Length: 184
Image (cartoon, rainbow, N blue to C red):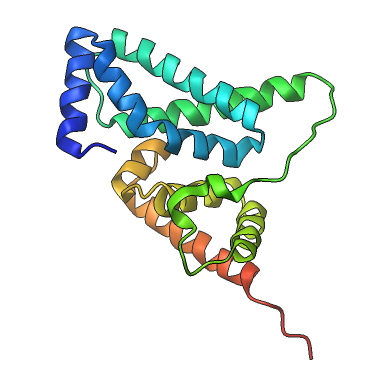
């Protein structure tokens, strides 16, 4: 991912000159993170790929019309969240059976480090998916996508303090779910 300065330069070129090469640089920097975020929500490679493309296309069109944004990553995640909501709304309108694939945690990037085995990661994913949606998102934004609290606040439309509280509660609940129950 480019540094904040080079990201701002690329964004400036997109906003002022509608430069597709600059947008390609931003795309390259964020495509894996957005794909991972979407894939975690839909658990289908095909749907995640389609939605990721849609997110970047919608973001390109938005940037052509608007000259001012606070955070490019914040904008991308907002568009991604809305695309996921739209997908589920469309699915709920159509009566069809939903088939879910097993999540391939090898897509999970940085958060699967050397100390965690694949089984531990699988168990963690299962526990995260048991959390309510709001908790899943803040954990993903903070620890998988490594976003700052300020960026998460912009994406979710909450104040920074509310994001910190939500993150604390999410981690507390995740810890409760992941600890084995002692039955005596």
